[in-house]
Image (cartoon, rainbow, N blue to C red):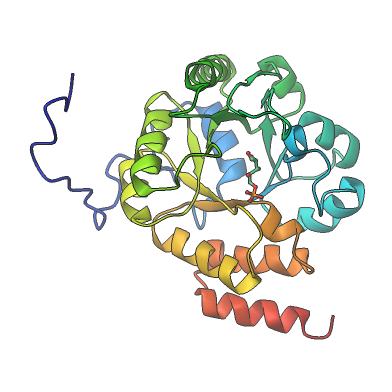
Length: 294
Ligand code: R5P
């Protein structure tokens, strides 16, 4: 097996060399895809910046009504105009989002775990591709548990969704999950992101960590970074900035937006980093300015 004898040469990720095979298309690794795939990816990644602000509020599929998401019908309409993509379950979209909005949709299509399970890694494909088409999904999101008990079934889920999406030109977003006892190391995320990309995912969602630029360089499709647990806004903006500087093509943020006292200002500040090259300091000043009298 490759590398069974150990690594013979030092790795070089060429982090200062831009991705070589993008052609004239703005989404990494997508130059050789067909028109339909490219159209969906363009609904996700802004052609000018090449980046995206996804707003993740799919937590209910395994966490129930988490703090900040108790009333989707009140929260989501406030945020729609301030993000590029809504990442959600079909139930949340149908019930709480008017169909006349013009942003991208990342549809959660895997399920099966919940906070009362000891092991969250066993899921199935809960939404089929015809339903994703009816929902006008721009990509289908599948949880992927590398190194966990449910690895085989989650790779089976991911592969089935990628294969189904290929029939109808709908991209797949592989969501790297981190189990309770797993460490968020660059070694783990390098392994997991590369596996998911090589299996055919068109976008990979993962967490920010040390050596992020190597993870992004070695992943041949765009990485979007999850926010994770709520941080102070200043810290969350710093994490967003480091992610974009490290090669992420967007943020897929949930709790750091919807658990902020100022979710709209937070979404806008993230957008400044993602699309307008703001530093974290400039974005923090922008956030303070927008919230000073509120
Ligand atoms: C988790 O599996 C879900 O996909 C969430 O969408 C994801 O964790 C992003 O949300 P947050 O920024 O709150 O971590």
